[in-house]
Image 1 (cartoon, rainbow, N blue to C red):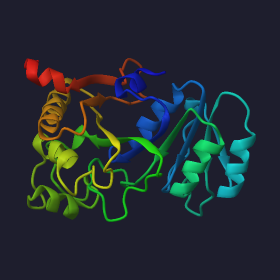
Image 2 (image 1 turned 30 degrees about the vertical axis):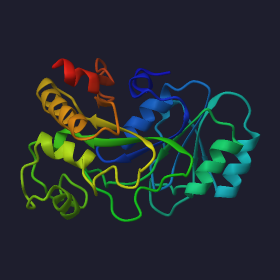
Image 3 (image 1 turned 90 degrees about the horizontal axis):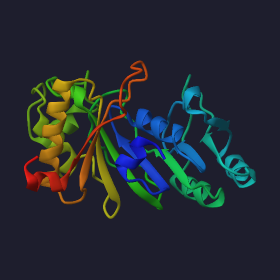
Length: 260
């Protein structure tokens, strides 16, 4: 199991990533280091996992992919994607199809991209998002630390008017650590639609010490505002940095009481 999977406390099953600012990066990091029998897919449009992950990519209609999953033997990492007319993009399976894929393919871990954000760093879901399989075990809620200090607008935020409504601030406001914490914890925020599931915030793109300080502040505020999770994981997933550590820090609830 990878350093990131250990930090997240993943125990297999269906794990979905939602939010903005690095869902695919998180899923790619996880699949590349995952042992056993692993599936990678989506319930929304997605790109294929890159070659460095070691994933074998299968493209076909849902029924064909399910039949293939049943035939695959032994350990291995496999992506299951639907054909699409969009260049470089593939369709996602139905939520029920992902449940069946995981069960009928006897996968130890199935990783799922469950919403989209158009390459922005922050979002709040619209009605109908995220598209989660019924048997999802864990939901990773991903946001980017890089939006801190940026204006709340369409350049950095997906559907900024929705985020402005949840945060109750004007469009164009400068985003602060408290705003990321609020997106994790407020009604209408990124946890909307995850009731009853294990959720875990991930703050990605923590690429320098200043950003780490700001992300840590966001993490501590989020833990203070919600009891639904016991940790927030800070990550740096830039493949261009040969010396980077995927897990920058894990901010745990028990550290708040110790004042550390």
